[in-house]
Image 1 (tube, rainbow, N blue to C red):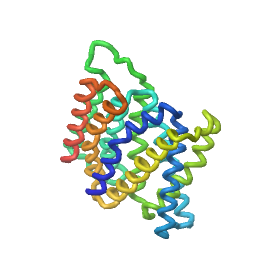
Image 2: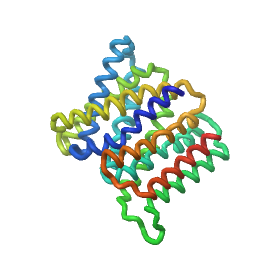
Image 3: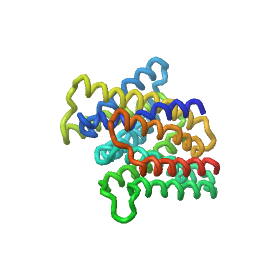
Image 4: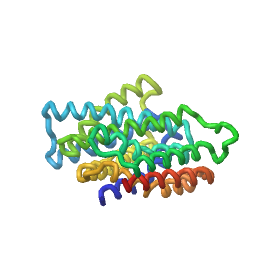
Length: 279
């Protein structure tokens, strides 16, 4: 439980960090810098802790999971943040806990209870309120590709963590291989797209923020929590502690005018997460 709470606290800053970084970098450029910083962190930790495992099983697991995360997941998520206001993208991304509980049924054989179903319906009712902007007489003016990307990212994220929970490799070893796999792929994606990111003090800062806080410290804490729990869905519900703090940062740091519909929609989503936790 303490590891999950530490991860949630770190993730409360993520939406703000993403939006600030995307003001000066393209999504794939920000991801490349973040993944490079995180790869360095995990490689150093694996070296100091003598946790390198050069066997085929280690690099194959790292390759498979690295393609899911950080490569695919963050490309999708950052593109969603680039298209949507943070107060919309952030709550949508938080519904991954419901996706996690649902996918845990076929993948981990965990039961799907009535409270989880009730929580699912409640959370997605909150999504409707969030996207509507409080008006139901006309279609909301939103980038619907961004909405689809934000919701699609929850599936990638949940699949990644459920697959991660089955791995027998040490956390640091697995993360080192995953990020070292993703970095050259992201460098290639940058080269084929907008080009490699410019190295300045601001771009380096945002890359380090994303890589060391979001992808580094939070990853280690969350992975440890997932390894220790016997119910992935229950641990996943702890994310409802961070979105309101994140919303405060979005308003105060990014300067977004927080709409009442965003607060109400987020509150309903969190209520759904709490209801499903009871199951």
